[in-house]
Length: 165
Image: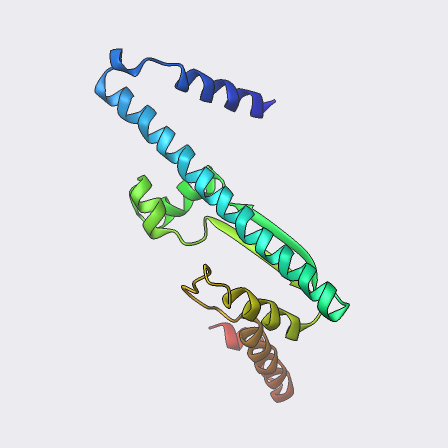
């Protein structure tokens, strides 16, 4: 039902003659249209990268007779979540700030059965001409370090609360 309301709002905006509106209302409508365009950009980027990963999955299936990818999930941060994050960081809510200050508007999670497969898929993806690595966070290495630290804590018999202070 809410999808129909969005479509009606989009249609209404597109069919509105903004030449007769005051400058503040015009500005708000134009900003909304630019935001919708930005959402479309991120949605298309997600589809493109997901397709690349699906092609890699098919290639592995044909070449090695196995599929290292269990599943692929995509997500686009909601408008409410974007606004909340900007407010939390005390950043004014503008399109420029959304583009420049937030790096997690769109995301893809590739789930593999084995840890080595994660690195193999990441390397294969990065070998493509139109993929550029901007930042790398290795949560696997950090998770393993955390688990080792936790085991050491337990072995030493240190109270858990003492480590949180």
